[in-house]
Image 1 (tube, rainbow, N blue to C red):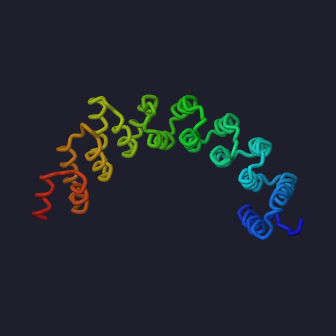
Image 2: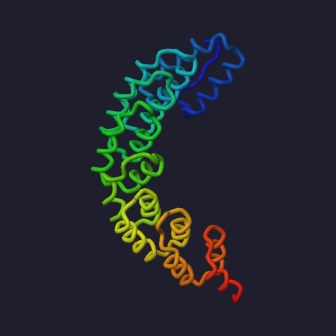
Image 3: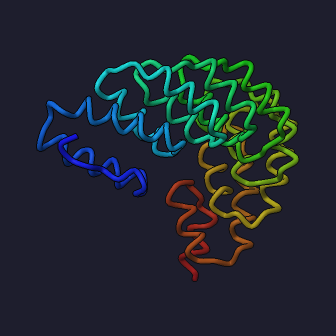
Length: 240
C-alpha cells in the first residue's frame, strides 16, 4: 500500500482517511478498500467491516460475502437495517430473519416501512405479538395504508395521546372514536387534543373546546384557534 491506514482508529476515522486517499489517488481506491477489509476480517473488527461493506457497495462490487459475515458475527440491529436500505444488492430475507432473531422491534418496524421487499404481513404479525407500543406506533404512523386491526387493542390500552390520535385517524367506528376521545380528553396533552379536533372527522368539537378552556392557558387557547375555528374560545380571549 502506498499509504497506511490504522484499523485501530474509530471506524468513521478510517472511512475519512479512506476518502481522503481516494481523492489523492482514485485508481488505488478499490485495492486499498479490499486490503482494509481483509485486515479487518483478520482482526475480527465487525464494526469496521460493516462500514467498509457500505463503501464497497458504492463502487458496485459484490458485498454478499461481507453481508453474510456481518450477519453471522453481529447482533447489532442497525447494521441489518442499514445494509437492507443502502447496499446495492442486499439479501433481504437473510437480513430480515436476522432482525427477527435479534428481536429489536424498533428496527423491525423501520425495516418493514423502508424496505420494499420486506415480508410485511409476517413483520406486522410479529409487531402485533410483541405489543411494543413505540414500534407499533412508528409503523402505523409511517404506513397510512396498513390494517390497524391487529394493533388496535395495544394502542388503546397504551393510553398514549400520540397513539390514540393516530388510531383515531383510521377508525370508522363511532363507538371506538368516542372511547378514544374520552381517554384523550382526560389527558393533559393539549397539543394532541388540538390535532384531534382539527383532523379527525367525527371529533366532538364542543367537548374539545371545553377541555382546552379548562387548561386556563392563554397560549394553549390561542394556538387552538389557529387550527380549529371556535367562536367560544375567541370570545374568551377577547375578554382575557
